[in-house]
Amino acid sequence: MKRTILSIAISALFASMMVGCKALHTVQSGENATGKPYELVVVCAQQAWVSELGDTLQAILKQPVAELPVYEPMFDVMRILPNNFKSLTERHRNILVVNVSPDIKEPALVVKYDATAHPQVYIVAQGPDNHTLAQYVSENRDNLLYVLEKAERDRKVSYAYNYPSIPLTQLMKETFSVNMPIPDDYALRTKSEDMVWISQEFPTSSEGFFVYKYPFESADQLKVDALVKARNRFASRIPGPREGSYMTTVSKVVDESGENYIPTKPDYKTIRIGDQPWVVMTGLWEVENYFMGGTFVSYTTVNKATNEVFTIDCYVYNPKKPQKRNLLRDLQHLVYMVNFPTQEAAATAQ
Image (cartoon, rainbow, N blue to C red; front, side, top):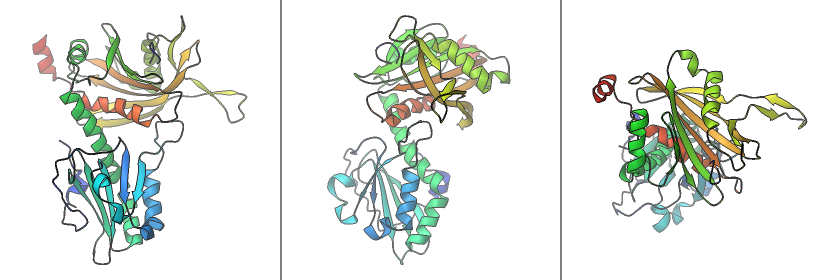
């Protein structure tokens, strides 16, 4: 917010598909993978691409990022013909090869890691004909997206473990009793006994997060209204560019007529990361007394070792460009780095 606000495992369903495939030629080059985060090279013949199969793949891979109010695709798809799949494109970080042949008896999705570069996920979608493979891919869309998304997330997690900010990682442990490596490209903005604010600032954008805690008393604290109230209490400590301005949660939006305001609440869902349940809220933030805002995603759980509500609240600010997906995803990956101590370990530490 300007200067003031602002391993890899194959899924179980894919494991059974690890079979030989002529389209998956392994070249152990040891070279570094190319490409940007969330780019995907799709190697597909023209006949398949303009068929039901191509339409299905594009509908899955280019579907909108659910957390963003303006359309951005889940992946930036770069389709190339098989004859052009060589050299630089062969070493891309994310590859999906489409192989249609009557010699293939059953459709399958074959996953391999670091086939031609590192770190890389290399997927082959194979089937006897376009229609059969399109149906199979559609039925397994969640698994396909999971593998691609997890590959991107694991790269971020790996970077954090390899290049942590020692002071910030230690601060998280001292403040919240959690083991959480913070990548060294983030910097501390403010800290207190129950909250830290960390961000990465750029000339025209910002990606940041604030982590906070408070005593856990009942499950009612994990309902949307209570979470928004808690969020606003802590977000008010994040100052805006003008004196007296601060971050808050958008509570009303303009209706379709553009003339009236209607109440709104963040989207709310529950997920599980490992054995830890989390409540996820997705919504919009704004700055009170200043024209500024963006998207946020918060993750809340209970630290059983300390009996405290624990929240990681991620926000992005990028008014000059519509692309916010990668900024937001970088922040969302942070929650996968949180490790809570057991109650016994916490007691011993005290």
